[in-house]
Length: 533
Image (tube, rainbow, N blue to C red; front, side, top):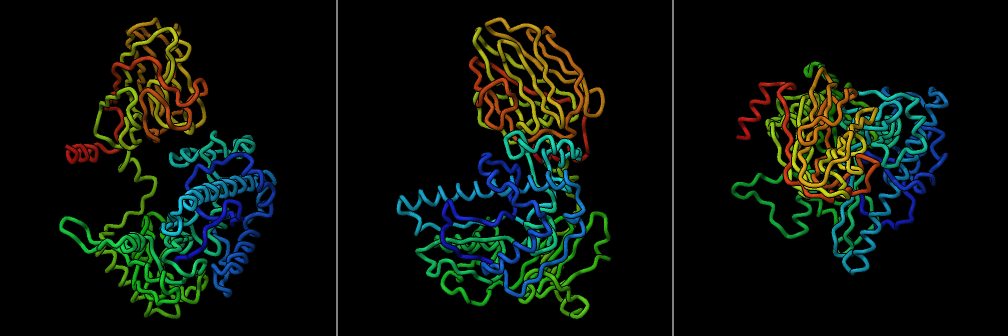
């Protein structure tokens, strides 16, 4: 539902709620301006934020606040320490959001200074509802969440002063995600309003005559591409070899804010959660992995009169519910939704982490390689080896993967060859016994797996073993975040070099080879290899 507003100035206040992909990081002064503002907790804030939404005209005056989500604890049930942790997470998120808002202001200020703002179509939106991934206390390192590694209250308490800095890949608790979805009930990854109802701001003064209006027409993210094409004067009609454009342009609302909604139907599906909107009505299910789809209960809401999906009308309008269920089946079939797959994190190793390759070659200074295309070294034996040409002053990064939240770096420090591995909880450092002699040197780091998430690591120089250590506390799946050679352009993997840690010698050759002692699904890996060949 597009809300057309005038450009926000960099100093204007915002509601500290909503969805943003972690890590939530901001300068400390931006975070500290919210200190103490969330001590009353998410239950109070949900009520307060709905009052603000109604006052701003975002939510209709008769909007009801849905009950607290059953997966969120009452704020008053938390201990004093848990409240401290949870409140600080939201202070960090609010600071992050305000800081982000200021950067949008910098862009629009520049466009305005260049005389371009009035004729620039600006669209600001959220990608989905606020998240529950943070669980009860939030995340210090979201990589742990994705690889099923828990965090403790004591770890959170110890991190309160650095939360929101580059030391953490942090995410807020589910309770604040729930509040961020006010007045709705569920979260990102569900097809209820809390998962799919998002803010949308469209700014284009040259075309939109009534800036600041709030529109009520139904809009889906699939409608934005045809909107942009229409604004640019491009015909979205299907062409040979090009898929048909999905969605309905909302450009008609630019001229008539009260125009009837032109869109007639929109289906939703995500990890087994299903939903369908048609002519102001919505049918939706909340799916749990493994449940029987046929036995699931569908809910029915009349969104035209129930903004928050507060009153389930399935029992009183069974015929309409049945029509919407049938419509969902047709739309799902037409859009290749079947077969339904309700896996979440379990899908990741089968879609991203099973590269069929066993050998990668790198060149000094090459651009960042995507984490999805990078060497898949998680829980398997592997070898990094190469040849470098150095002098007595040479230093810097030879190969880096991931970032401060998890990864590894092979670098030269004070003439010594060093490998640092940033695991789920510990940093493991292996350093050559002696400094490398100037000239051409053959270097290697070898990891020999001895069990799940553990093994023996060795550093070699010119074929000599310079250091050996047992490594444990390893990531179950490969570290993501991309790979660089000859520098480090993500968050620093080591405190021993200044970013970007450019290598001052010459990398003559560098390769990574992985062994065959880790396969989640050999048949699938073989299939991927055949498809790519």
